[in-house]
Length: 233
Image 1 (cartoon, rainbow, N blue to C red):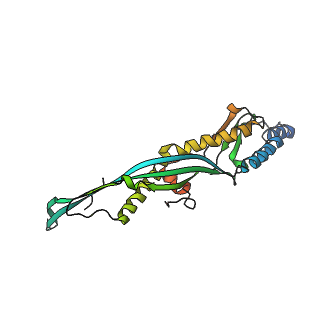
Image 2: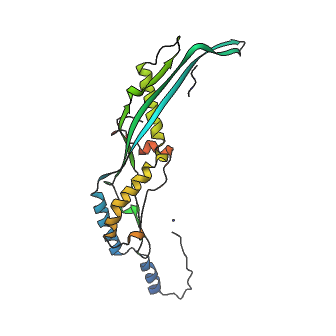
Image 3: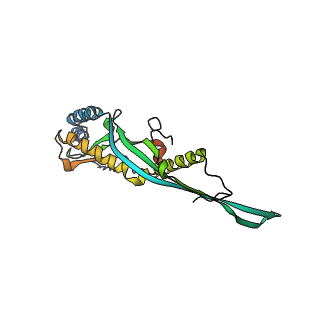
């Protein structure tokens, strides 16, 4: 056996004497102004030119450990009467790995519905496309690998070490939401987009750049770019 170490709707009720002219004026006030539409198109075209924007890079050092202890078990009628560690049946390993992660945002499919303006046209909110995370390198520090095996056990095989290393990389990937790389990606994208949007007449303090949500480990299959990564998730 192994032991493993938001828009609200406001309704007005009018009397029958309200004229059609009044109704038309009310409807027109809610129309999207041509200038806003034109601005949206211009912004979309400008943002798309950035194409794939690499926004963050993280280097993560991790030590993958594994302990394997042999047990002696004896059962009688389905009941364990002996469960003891075998003497000289222990082995352990520590594998240092370095993983480089990069985050990028692909603006090639950026659309106008990802731009929201306040009714007064003074504030603007840009919703970024989902970020993508890529593992650009994964390296084992072989000189610093340490393992111990009792007399009755063999050293870990290359296949076992490769398996442990892959588990370590996946562990790093699962920690992406907590690493801060996605927030760094958002801030980096904002630093690129805000000056562009400000050049269209908006005050910088009135520009908000966000992702569509706060991502968790459950979102990783969507965010991870297997095609460009050296390690598959």
